[in-house]
Length: 147
Image 1 (cartoon, one colour):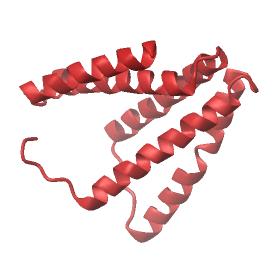
Image 2 (tube, helix red, strand yellow; image 1 turned 180 degrees about the vertical axis):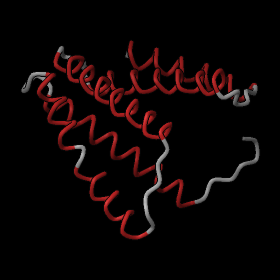
Image 3 (cartoon, helix red, strand yellow; image 1 turned 90 degrees about the vertical axis):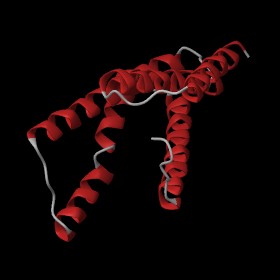
């Protein structure tokens, strides 16, 4: 997406998303070891319905909801995968992995894999600068994990 400009609203939303995921990881680390991973994941799944339910109800009232079978199927996949991810994070943190090591390493690794999927599945562009970013990310993961 060479030359694509990102709006300031999108940047603010991205920063907000970063803060939310950081606080979620902090909360996950704080609860790991104090609750069984399966129960922690169940509570995560049960409570995570509150905000989307309110948002969907508001959207339905103001502009209407739309859905396709494909959209529903992919959304189910997202829910299942995030639940598995959360369960794995509970197990990882309950085994003593530090937040400052585990979260960045796992997330950066996931970012790299997601980028590879974007290139392979969606045929998104790749440049030398992009490859340099991959290399720096790999070095960053190594440095974080080995401290």
